[in-house]
Length: 387
Image 1 (spheres, one colour):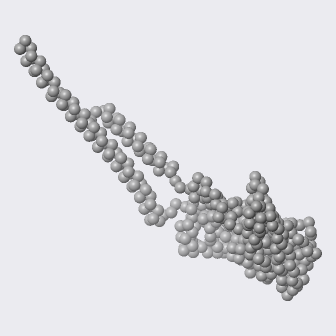
Image 2 (cartoon, rainbow, N blue to C red):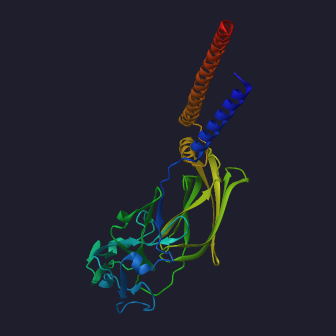
Image 3 (cartoon, one colour):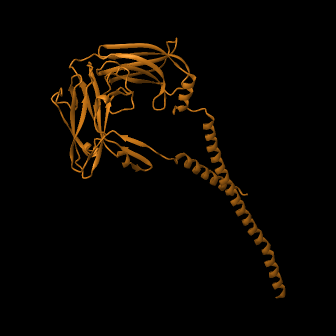
């Protein structure tokens, strides 16, 4: 095998290897679902939502300049309020309605349309039990229709605010998925109208109560949660929370979080997350120190909690930021590497066999030419002697 052939063979193998490596590196499948909030400034909200609404304020509306209902009610009072829906489009539509009590999410934001968050133990009267309405309304093209909501106040009087909201959303939005280059983008648009019910104009002072601390995850990353409640039927605004986690009996801070400008709904709880900064969760006894402030109000707690071995193992296996130590992952890596090496080896073997055959063919042709040359010379000599 000549040096030139070996050099050419090495170059061919190197080119094939690099090509396969880059192919394995960049080829992939993307599957993304995006949920639109309806706040796209480039889209007309009326066109995006598919309909419009107006509010019909009753006489007991406390402030008619508001864009939501704030009603002054009496114990046991029954009342009907109206929302007028209009369909400016050229097609028939269905509008889904949902009534939900006000809740506080993990980010310290009040939600009026999330029925997945449970009610707090301090809640005396659930909004969903007091306000009822249809689950959906059909609107013909160009039609305007009044939707009535029935309110039945509890017989027992209460202080503060019962807060909730009405969500209005065009039906079938998830059916209009728009596949773009392997990704699925789903934009959902909805209106949420707050409804506040109260029996007096007295303003109550919010108060916080510690519930528990425990291990968990936020966006599939290890965290510690502090659960506390606003036990008064009043909104808590401009809340700042600072939280630290230490090993029990130690003053060394392992994890800490501070968040400002949060709000809490009346008689609701919050699961406040403290991120573990990508570290593995370890079982053991811990202490959490929490300082919450809102204006001149101040709450401070120091509480112990435990992370069990089962919890630590479970959350470490689910944490997307950790390198897992399970046999399944190493087997997968081995299969990928083994498959890649096998493909490269087969291609290299085929190249070698091909060049060997080509080399033998060239050698055979060269040998044949050498055998034929002497015969031509003999024939020439014979002809010369005859002359």
